[in-house]
Amino acid sequence: MVAGDETPVSLCEREPFVPAERLVAEMVPPPRFGDVRFDTYIPDAKQPSQSQAVDVLSGFAAGLGGEAPGGGRRRWFRREARPAAGPKGVYLDGGYGVGKTHLLASLWHATPAPAERKAFGTFVELTNLVGALGFQQTVRTLSEHRLLCIDEFELDDPGDTVLVSSLLRELVGSGVALAATSNTLPGKLGEGRFAAVDFLREIQGLSAHFRTLRIDGEDYRHRGLPEAPAPHDDHTVTRAAYRTPGASLDDFAALLAHLSRVHPSRYGALCDGVAAVCLTGVTPVPDQATALRLVVLADRLYDREVPVLTSGAPFDQLFGEDMLKGGYRKKYFRAISRLTALARDARRLTAA
Image (cartoon, rainbow, N blue to C red; front, side):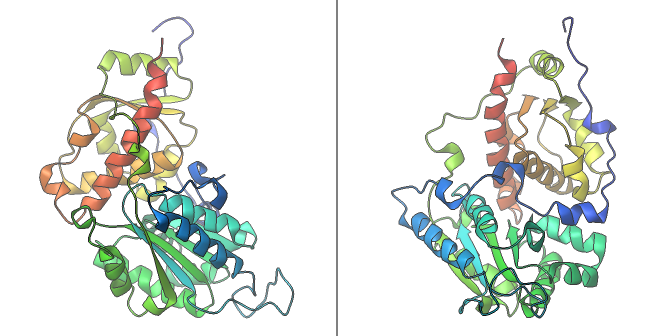
């Protein structure tokens, strides 16, 4: 440390309270996707399905310019406008990093309705909303929306899948348009529509409302980029934390313990105002519950474009072989991909 350095904050000392109203108000595309549009999506010329998805989703958004749900109590267009015929939902099926979230956020932006009548959130955030508001209040709140976008639909928790399926059934009945993404399981890449088949089966009777769009391609986060940077030593990470205004500094094991005491719905608030996350002593996570909490934190950091600088084990060693072959493997692969991208972003923190 030198004169002028700032003492970094500690995530372990934060215990945020998040009112239910904030959970609803924050159901918009995260900052990383706040400015994306269909015309900023760069399709891979070798993957025609990517360009086709842009065309289909653009038309889907334009077709949502009819009456608002709930008996037409709110109208944003001429009275004679009618909802478009065909499926009232789209499902984006594809692997990691092909731009599904970019496209989903672009759909949200392109849909001709006020921001307060469109909702965007991850599957986990949606289940957290139900937990905060209760099922019936969530139905009443979201049934007034024109569009609900669900990113990273999870198929590995039967209870949550049934809960969200029931919620979607109620919302479809109210006229809410739906859009969703999820990842093809790592062990099933290249096997066509495996994820789509699972999704359409698990949403229990709602499959007729969805048009499936297959999006092929490689993970753009690693397309043409070097390997993930190696972790630094403790001194380098600590020095960077003190030299970076708004940075946090925590021991990795202590942070994992703290996450067990904070509800995942509050992980976004845990990162409020944090410009960079610095972690010392990273080691493989010890168990599944801890690993799943870390996945949620990685998602919130990625959404907010918060760089992550670490010492200890590299990110590809965070999850053991048994985890990467188990039922939650798609979450762990996503977390590795996203944390690797944030580690690249953090390289500037160590510049002299």
